[in-house]
Image 1 (cartoon, helix red, strand yellow):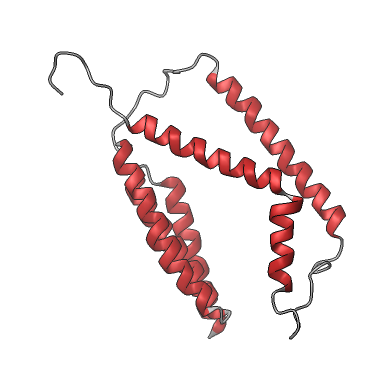
Image 2: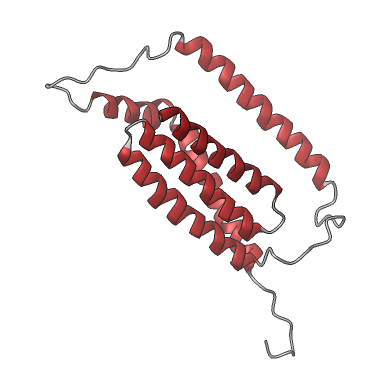
Length: 179
């Protein structure tokens, strides 16, 4: 029975993920994303992680996809645009260079983390009755002490993305039309 549920949930995840990539309409792609997220929630239930399944449905399938749909409707992505026009000269070549740099950084991070971590699970503090929040303290230390620069850089990146979305959504007012 567990195998049947796993196969059905995996089929949901794969078909939803394929729909996100293939569908030309962004609203339909967001609906396919909901199918993917529900399939993952089913996989969480199979592994007796009921809280994670509930969070998956409420937070991701509920709030995040609604946020995606809000941005899609705000930007009016449903109309076709001419992709041959580049707003910035050399934008595509710059995107290839930046993408290659980001890929190199990710590959270097994965390689260095494999050599630094060693065996799986090594370095995790054991929780005991005297110290029930040892893992939380270790996680906080890793984020806010060891990796504070990357954490702050991520926050700046998200801020720039929000500002860029707001600027893209603004409509320019033309003088004399009364709009």
